[in-house]
Length: 166
Image (cartoon, rainbow, N blue to C red; front, side):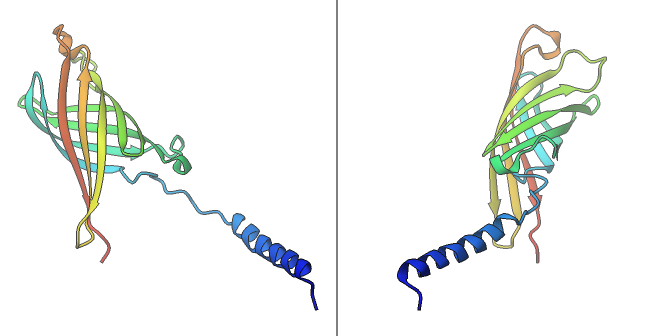
């Protein structure tokens, strides 16, 4: 028969052995720690250009993202429809929690200066059918918009919808 001290010590060793075994298991981190990568339909209003629509694509930079810390790094392309011709911006984003910071610039090197920074708040919802919706509510600032001497600014809302599993 074991003494109480020996029994406690044995249970501690067994518990430690079981817990230690789980520590050796590794799970692959998700490619997109915040699940915001994808294609979004956007509409917005720009101080100079008025209302606009576009398509935003966020791609995860897996080498720079840090899932354990809830940090996502992203590359972006944003195609805006204009009356003259579509304009494409490229850039980068960094997200933590429900905030996404962005840098973007017009890809056309011959165009006037058209670059800026933005800050978006993220919301993620799921409906009764299992459809997931991610919405970015963004405000942006363009310090040298089109070389006109007046800074630019605007707001936009971008929505990504992903059907749930049946």
